[in-house]
Amino acid sequence: MSDDSTCLTFVRDGRDCSLFLGTARDAADIRHVRHVVNATECVPNHFEGAKVSYLRVAVPDSGECDLDRHVGAFFEFMQDAASKGEPVLVHCRSGRSRSATLVLAWAVARCGYTLADAWAKLSRERECVNPNEGFRRWLVALEEQCYGRVSVGWFDRSTRGTRGRKRRKLC
Image (tube, rainbow, N blue to C red):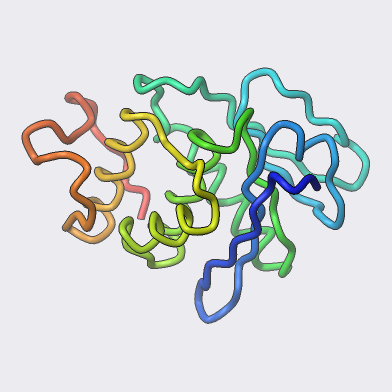
């Protein structure tokens, strides 16, 4: 993979869960990775069928995107790789918004991190991460659903939420 990718390890159930957060360019140059989450609508799965398992989470980088309908499959894919002790490349076009949001959601909903701790870890390792405002709102609502509280001050309570949509239980 290129020098643009970032290796992260989150601990889940006492086991390390390693993943790479990267870009579209990283997706074309994978080494030692057998699981790839492609969080784009248009970047090709370059090695499909070549002993690489793919999950496409085809979401636009839009604040109006409904991530709830995609994260169940994402969590299952991540869990499968983690149970095998194999790392996953999670990428979008720039490795800043869509893929970062998915990684943060995994850390919060499945690895027991608060959003503040996951954000601190991710932004320390990959300074360019910047989920769009809609994704940030979604992450805040996810954390509140998982833990009954919010650890980040991105938004005040009056502007947080899912705009009237009923959220599926994700934690």
